[in-house]
Amino acid sequence: MDIVEQVVGKYLVDLVTAALEGNSQRAEVIALSLSRSLRKENLIVAKKIDDALSLFSLRGSSAMRGGDVPPPPIDADTHAEMAKVISPANLTLSLPILNLETEVRIKAFLNERVNVGKLIENGIKPSNSLLFVGLPGTGKTMLAHYIARELNKNLVVLDLSASISSLLGKTGHNLKKVLEYAKKTSAVLLLDEFDAIAKRRDDSTDLGEIKRVVNVLLMELEEWPVSSVLIATSNHPELLDRAIWRRFDHSIEVGVPEEKQRILLLERDLGSFVNIEKEGGGIIVVIAKLLEGKSAADVIKFCNNVKRKIILNEQDPIEACFNELDIDKSEKKTRGTICILLKQHFGAKITVRRIAEITKLSSTAVQHHLKKISHE
Ligand SMILES: Nc1ncnc2c1ncn2[C@@H]1O[C@H](COP(=O)(O)OP(=O)(O)O)[C@@H](O)[C@H]1O
Ligand SMILES: [Mg+2]
Image: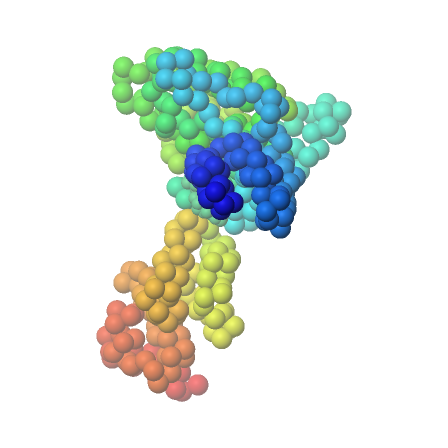
């Protein structure tokens, strides 16, 4: 059997399976054996595998390895893990693009955490609980990931929408176990979409259970250890008990991006596709205006749709942007600006009729707007 057959037969299938299962420890072991068996035949590839392995360890996955961190608690009935543990190496490095006020508050919190020792020495309790509220897709979950990464802590994620039924059945017992686990491992605990508890209030049979679960949480918040951080997120803050809001050190509103942040997102994701220089930044600014009220995730989705159109349909980038926009609903003045921008960009290549089509204005209105440029 030649080496290729050997490698494919012995390692590749296992490696693919481990990777798809997200089992990095298993993948690491297989990769080590693979590199060992390749050493004689192909030293270069073996070395490359070793390099990848050492890079992986250097990036701090050690927190996840061996017996360092105990496995998360499991549900007694289903034997399913009640939380997911993510090591810092597998968390996002990038701060979400936030409105100024939110960013300032997050940075202040991180600064407190870096100076925990100093605060304690002076008898001041550092903040250790955060509540993020805001519309879906504004970056609340991403922010929790980023914070755990910045603090170099494991992130323990309890997805309430996934585990709610077992939680309720066990009168908060499961939740308590996860909370204990996060405390013991000095992790950042994320109670994502926390309002899943409150939502169940409509169901009267669950009322007693919900109260108990909420009470567990309120008590835990009181005595949450300084070494650990608790983050809860909610898309429906109105469903949460005021008593809960008050217990968090900071409740932070994560809003939809303002124009400045929308411009940053567009520049980041479309900058290399749409020639910003050529338009003097104009196009991006106009698009940012038209995306008012959209969440950051919506803006990113918009950019991906546009990029797909550019690549697959070979559309002109600017045209692809405007086709993707919901211009119908945008105000008249903006539509006028778009007319001018389109004409400036395409020149003789675009007809009045086409501009009218894109902007949903009448041909007469388009001509009226275009007169403004010819007068300049
Ligand atoms: N403020 C933001 N800055 C950059 N990317 C963002 C932002 N908000 C959301 N995203 C993108 O959208 C995805 C989904 O956001 P997520 O954090 O799950 O939102 P939420 O938890 O508020 O519903 C993120 O993984 C990220 O790629
Ligand atoms: Mg979320």
